[in-house]
Image 1 (cartoon, rainbow, N blue to C red):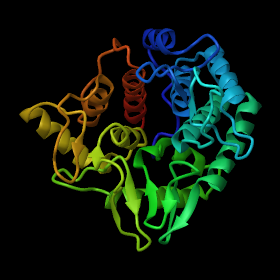
Image 2: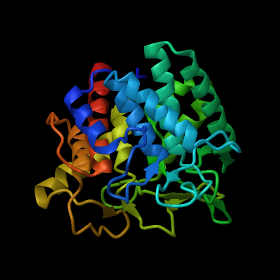
Image 3: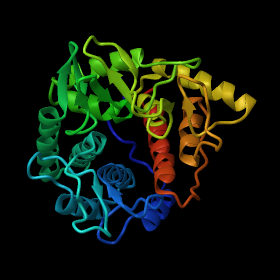
Image 4: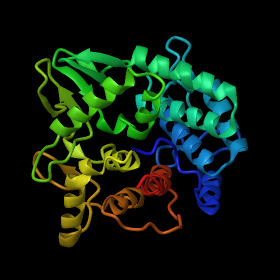
Length: 320
C-alpha cells in the first residue's frame, strides 16, 4: 500500500535552517530566487515540512498568513502569487492547483497528528473547492487543471503532471471516492505523456479533444523545472514501477556528462547548466542513493526540493 502520510521525522537542523532562511516572522514563505515573492505552492511545501518537524507554532503562523492573504472568496482556493512590492500584492486571481493540493494535504495530516478539528474542516472545504473548480471531464477522462483560468481552449486542455501530488491524492481518495477517477486517469495520462529517447514527461502536456497527447505547443518541451517533481511524488506514493524511465535517464546521463537542469523531450537539447541541488536530491533518491543530512543553498526552490526529497525517501522506505 502506498504511504498515506508525510514522514514525521524531518531532521530538526534541516528544518531550522530552512525556516530561518525562507520563512518571515509573519509566516510568509519567501521565494528568494524570484524577488522574495510568495506562492501558494511555497506555503504548502513549508506547511508539510513544519508538520514533519513537529513545529506546530510555525505551522499555525504560516497557515494564518496564507488564509489572510491568499484565500479567494470567489472560489475557496488560494491566489497563486503574492508580490510584497506591488499594490495590491495579489494582482492575479488565478490559483495554482498544486499549491491548493499541498495545503489541503498538510491540513489533513495536521488534523491526524494534532487532533485539531479546524484543520480537518478547512481541508475538507478546500478539497471540495478543488474538485468543483479545477477538475474537468475531457476526452473521456477526469483531468486536473493547473489553474482555474487559462488551461482550456480550442486545442484542448493543458495539464502539468507535476501538479498531481500522488501521495496527497491517495490520502484524499480515502475520504472522497471521486478522487479515484482523477488518480486513475492521471496515471493513464502519465503513461501516455512520455516522449523522446528517454521517454520523459514534459513540464506541460496538451490533451486534444480526441485524447491525443503532446508537449504543449506554447511552452518549451522540457523535462525540467516542474516535471522534476514527478518522480519525487511517484516515489513518495510508492509507485516505483513508474520510475524506470527516470532512473534510466539519470543513471545514463550521469555517466556521460552529468545531470543537466533540463532536457528537451523532442529535440534532445539539454541545458548548458547543471541540475539544481534540489533536483539532484530527487535524482539521487530516484536511483536509490542516500541523501546527505545537510543543506547549504540560498535558493528557496532548490532547498524545498531537498527537504521534500528527504520526506519522500523516508515515506517510501517506511512503506516497504
